[in-house]
Image 1: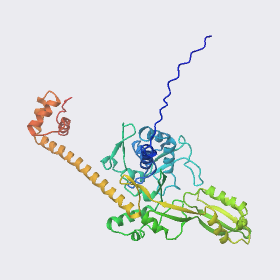
Image 2: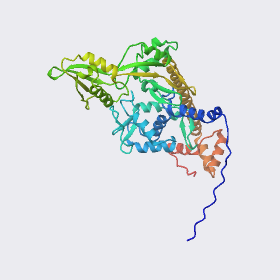
Image 3: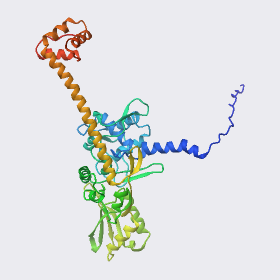
Image 4: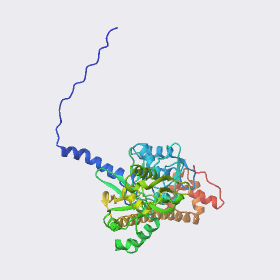
Length: 447
């Protein structure tokens, strides 16, 4: 058999393009960084959502997944979001969807999940083909009046549909649910807050635009983490609210109880925010096994959590001082963690680090724009309706002449022109047919 002749190799271009590093960085890295900052990792100050979260809620709104409708498979929601708006992997979309349905991640959940959406132990959610979801009432408030030209829209990734640049967000979601994300050269970590306190603070700033941070803190005294815990008073909180950056000390809530055989129990009922309970207990067990100092007094560690609530117990040996053990655990385990506040978000089209007052100010301005645009839309709709009603009034007042002109016309277009010339009107001919039906006359067949 003859050997097959290989095709000739294409010529190799040995030309080397030499460019300065600053040009390469400017043309490649800086646009990539800008895209990650603005289109992926950081939330908008107006609605407190990252683009993927905004697209998920908008997709669920299009699917009609309101709180009064049945749950829908998460795979369907993720597929629609990917196909219409989000040109990235399905993992990122489903993780964002699951997080909005976790009561240990968000202070006020936006998604009502049905199925396994993970746990405070650090377990991940079930696959999206097994879980179902729909919007919660708060998500409806995030999208309320979006069909009334309250926000601007842009084309999606393939220019076939439009998606909102920001949601109307009728409550201050950024402060209520917080945010965390890592971009290129930037990161954000905004703590969640109590919804009632934040809304009271917003109302106070609306009433008094010159309100100070100290006065705002009488309404919003501190963050309110969904997993509870104790926030230490160390003076850093005011710095966080003034500058948008500080380090807070957050502790688990621990009760000292009497146990069997004269032993003391350290009962943990609340864990620090974003600390997996199972990993925290495993670290404490590892510390006790290493025989580090006073932790040799730990007799047993067990998780007694059930559907009634979270509870983990550290059982101590007899004659061991529980206060000393607890102080040691605060120092060396995750019973006490440092929460780094870094309130960075997209404001005015660029990333900014904002304090509490500035963040609320942007939200108030957004609400003013939403209400103004909604009112203008309602006014335009009312004027259009009034124009039609005025024409119908003239038609009813001159019903015989209107009937004569319509019957004398051969086509709807000819009837429309005749009515416009006779009464200086412009309205759809079928409205005249409706009038005739209402007054009991014979229905006209105008095509």
